[in-house]
Amino acid sequence: MDRFLYIVSADHGRNTYIPPHQHECYELVYYLEGKGTTTIGQMSYPFQANTFAFLPPRCLHNENHQEDARILFVGFQCASPEMRSLSGVYEDDKDRTIEQLMRRIEAEFSQRREGYAHLLNLMASEIAPLMLRMFGRGKTAQASADRVQYVRNYMDEHYRQKLSIEALARMSGYSYDRFRHLFRDRYGDSPIRYLLMKRLEFAKSLLIHSRMHISEVSSETGFTNDAQFCNLFKRETGMSPGAYRKAKAGSF
Image (cartoon, rainbow, N blue to C red; front, side, top):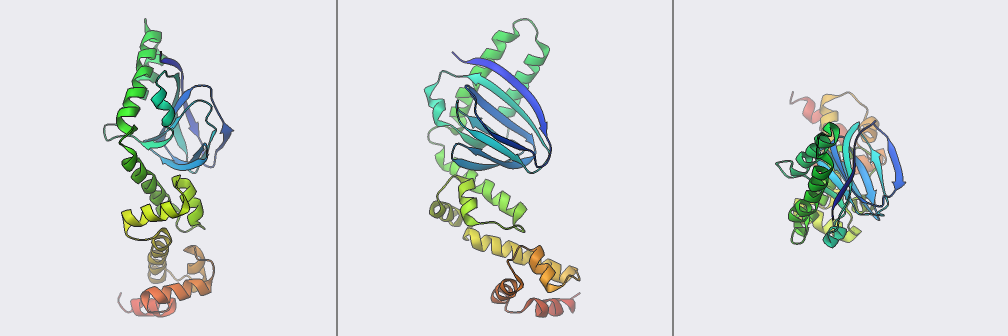
């Protein structure tokens, strides 16, 4: 029999780290606001608003919050053996089905009207069929695409920082080779080239719209050193950064 155990609303500040821990029950952690990463078992996942982590019993997990976050998490017991196969970070659907269920549980728990304990157990029993309908067997292709999408979202926000493809692959939950293959299939470029083009586009903008020195542009856009920046810039544009700046200066 499914049974409701607890529901908690919490706020976490930017750079909050929740160390590895586990629970004896299932837990669903819904991210209403914020952005960060969580490691669940051996796999790392990015999370953002309107995604949620689903955690089976005794599954070691942590959280690293990169922005101020508001979360809602529920603990429950579940009799369905199929639920054991579900763990990770998932994106809610367009109707916010999981969020709406969490809100209903939170409201019922806070109001505590007659019969609330029975109703909370009934609402907790909705989690398993909803999760299996949305993310169970036959949904693995979409789940794979979502995980790669989450990593690309992370790359879009952090491309100016030092990023390794190995770390991004771990974040996706795939092997290094599998991640590169899935990324190229979906976006038409390898992860390393995608990062390079993001950095070069930002570098072009800085060269045109700022007076930053070439070395400052190199550092600001995430390149290892000036030589690497200049070589890659010239390879992709046909001009050095300085020549590009002069050429564009005459266009404005």
